[in-house]
Length: 108
Image 1: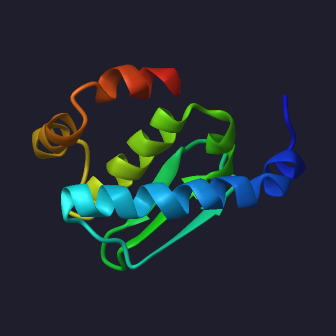
Image 2: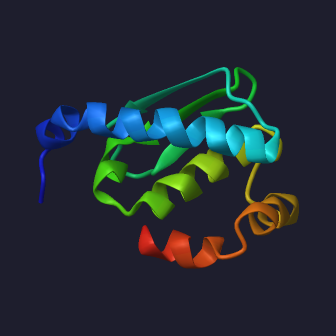
């Protein structure tokens, strides 16, 4: 299993992808983050602080297919609008990414 240092070394690669994909999904959804960052996380693919508009992405996404990164970006952007994972949240996921469940399963 790769080490934390492995992912830290690959951070620029993930950052470059996010710099392209985050604005794409912000435009598609009309939701805008105030800032974003990446870090090594052991139990989440992403996180969001809606009150501050901040989103964070797990460095381990660098080893996943790009569609997984897009899903996590969309997931965290929707949290800026919908707290929790209830029906409103899921409806937004289906609206923008009808196959989100299949992609989500790739992250398990």
